[in-house]
Length: 37
Image (tube, rainbow, N blue to C red; front, side):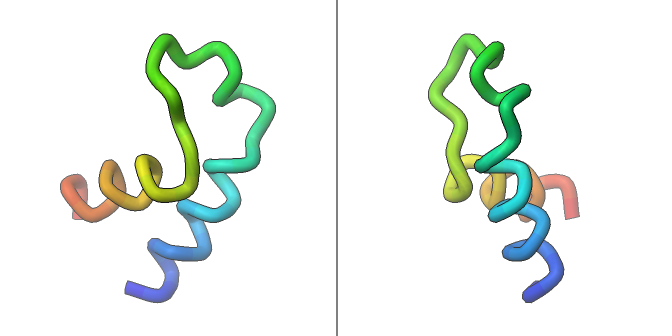
């Protein structure tokens, strides 16, 4: 699961997250990854 946390950290800081209609941060990214995994 540590890999998911690293991916979430990276995803939460991506500039592409600014186009997401919902707030998107590291914690939201981790939730998405955990649900998908």
